[in-house]
Image (cartoon, rainbow, N blue to C red; front, side):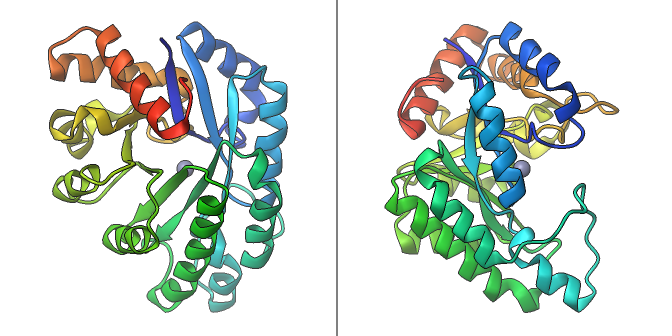
Length: 271
Ligand SMILES: [Zn+2]
């Protein structure tokens, strides 16, 4: 049995300098697999290199963050967007091509999706086009998809259903719990719950009310920390396990066994 984190950003400038200590704490917390998610070609490359030097602990997910997918257009329109990385901004074509060229080495494709929080409506169609290309690519290669969606949850679901995608993790689902329950009814769709669950009502309700065979662990580190004021990290997945054990009235081992089965069902091997 092992904990796992299906949505980490270990290449983030906030975490990368402490990589060795973070991976060490994850191992000591019982984490068996961390899926580090890439945001753009440069980040995907960093994720790939990290996974190679991690001794099997980190698996790479390659993606194109839904904001990065239309970032050149946003810049041209003068839409403000805060970024950690002030490097060159690749085009969506370059972003998709990178994933296509490396998809065989990917553990999953992500993060990809639709974001209507930062991205203005004028660019939604363009964003959907890029998302569809990446979903198609993942499906052709039979890779699970890790989805980011913000204020575009229903549309994301429509597209995934229309395309017949059935290996999907919905990361940090922020829409209504009722919609999360609908998603959890679909074959092959899972929702991963961050480590700040005790502080976020909707995540708590998802743990309490979603089918237990559709839940996974994530941290979205360095974000969504269980303790405000510090960066989160994969070892924090233990917070979600503790919360679920209390909510379900069972031992933490039982929670981990359940979630490990879910991980294996989506990713094809235990964490
Ligand atoms: Zn993320």
